[in-house]
Amino acid sequence: MCGATVQSVNHVRAMSTTVVNDETGLEEVTEVIETRLTGFVIHALLASTVFLLPLLKFLPIPVVSGVFLYLGRKLMTGNTFLQRVKALFVSPSKLPEDHPVHIVGRKKMNSYTLLQFACLSGIWAFKQCSATAIFFPSVIGLLMLIRSKLLPRFYAEKDFVALRDETPS
Image (cartoon, rainbow, N blue to C red; front, side, top):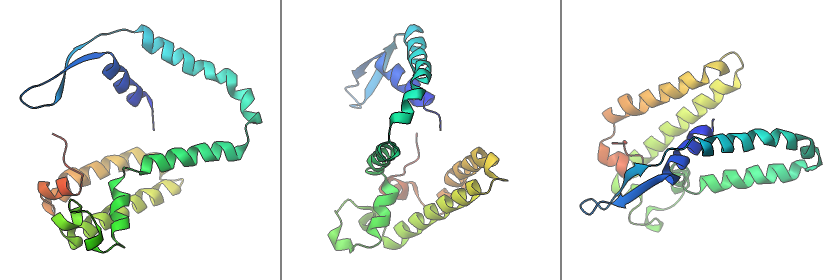
């Protein structure tokens, strides 16, 4: 993964002027102040971290592992796939009213979750084989095709919205 995209989007957002549209209630960008200096400074600071590499040998491996474990756990809190996996083992009466199991039903929710699990297992297996790992980006493209072309044949857009995986407009 490349963090440059996230940096760029956040930088553009920070350098933009927004106003709330009265009709839609959504925030709209009115102007973006362009500057190349901040991008240069950010990347120069990132490049300067190469000089900190000799100091990394003093950092214990469990500390580094703990940081990555914390970041991974923090990223999983809003993951709807994991929430649906947990819901497989919970009675529907214990779940909130807006949970997908109440909207699309347990069978449809579980089939979607199992399909996602199968795709995840497939890309994991694909990446583990050194002969095929180089084509990993192509497999991600294949997943995009599955989501955009194949899944709409089995799930309506209201199902995707209920499963919190709506199609971007």
